[in-house]
Length: 175
Image (cartoon, rainbow, N blue to C red; front, side, top):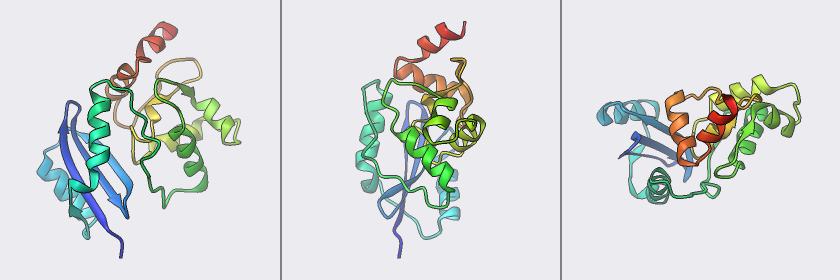
C-alpha cells in the first residue's frame, strides 16, 4: 500500500502545501487559501493521506532557506511524475536540471528534448508542473527574453526570479 503524506506550512509567500507518495513529492502548491480548506482539499483528493510535518522536514528547511534568499538547489528532492506522458516527463526532468540563477527559453528546452518546433508544447508541459520551485519552471522564459507565463501567477514568478537575481536581467533585456 502506498504511503501518502501531506503538510501545510506558512511562509513569506503564503501557505505551502506539500504532498508525497512513497517518499517522493507529487504536489507543491503555494496559496493564500485557508489552511483548513487546503487540508480538506488534499484529504478529498487523497483520502488515504495522513498529515505529517516530519515527512517534509528536509524540503521544508530547504524552502525556508530559499525564500530567505539563500542559494538552494533542489536536485536531490525526489519527485513522482507518474501519470504524465513521456514528453511532459522529459520536459520536466530537463527543467529540473536548470541550475539556480540560470534561465532557459521554452525553445531551448524544446530543442534539448528533441522537439525543435515544440516551444508551445514545452509551455504546456511546464504549465502543468505539479511541483513548482522544486522543478523550477519559473526559470523558463520566452525566446525574446521576456518573462512568459507561470501557473502560480506572474507575480509569483517575478518573486522567485527576484530571489535568484535574474528578474532584473530579464527586465533589462525586455525593455
